[in-house]
Length: 453
Image (cartoon, rainbow, N blue to C red; front, side, top):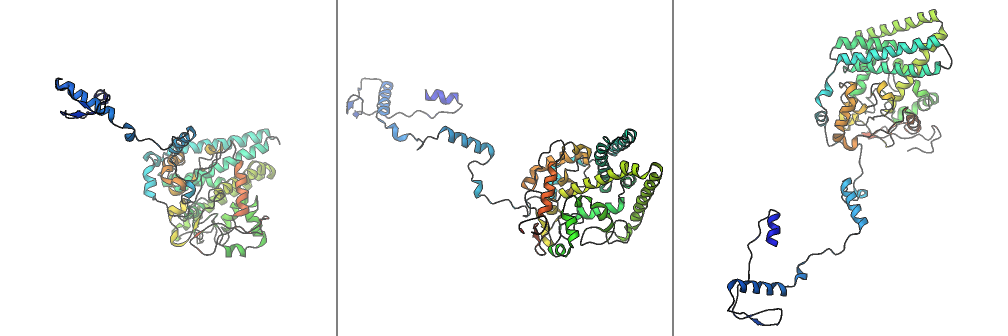
């Protein structure tokens, strides 16, 4: 029987071993001593000896059994552990993840994980987004002017302010060169889009380049960087109030264009600013001239349609666009439930700084503002077109591991981000003046905070 089972399982059985028949006493089941019948054939003698041997052997000593049979609940728990990858490991005893520690991967690892087609820039596809947004802007303005109803105006302001923000994002892609491989096309489209919403294209493009090159660096980052404690303490009461009390920080962008952030000097309109290199002065002058031309056009339009109508058609949407810009850019670097590191000195690197940025989910707005909420990959590889950012991020997640922070899922409209914004204003005030890896601390005197953390 055993030979048959082994053969069916594809295994070669061992040759059967029989005890050598002896003349004399052998054990039997009927008596303690028995004698072989020498008149039997050799085969019969072998069978008799084997049967006696099997009967007398103590099989109980050869069986291996568990000390205790696990219960059904324990078996289910073990199965869940295996499926979850824990396999019985006590995670409370594992070392806690340190977001400030150097990652076990490099930029080349991330780049290799991203599909090759994600790097391809399609100027026709990019222009189709421009056409879509421009048509939406003009259509909204025409509809609002035609209806001219106070029930319609608030809806128009919300929609048009969001579309102004969408125009900015496309001009932002031009500034990064992710719009197309043609620098002239990028410059022309970028100037048209940004000038239409009163943004000096080259001035912003250059300072934004500085932001990307130094993201996550306490002193060298350009926008929404943390204030060292000595700078924070030097701020007057009004400046502190405006910087850390909603909604005032959401109106900061025009001020930033004119005078940059606290602790920094210069202007996006001044070609002699330390923001710019000597060979960039002509670009800054060109963008400032385009900005001035748009401002003059708006003033002339005000004489034609009246200042109130201009305020309703352009002024209010512009302010909502500014709020969108400040909200999105701030939350890409602040407001996570866990404290995120900022760096100085030798601890800073392009990769480590970029990994402190955050992705955000904006619900229905994701498609409208061209997936700018998919920000981590964008910060590390700004040359990837916006229409490939989601796919590139999904491909890179296995490389990122815990260094990627999955954004909270949004409802159709991202109202949940308002709470995260306000919480950050109440807690993220300054960082230490010393140390190469620092985290935000809280000032007890702002917004009724109970203590400094």
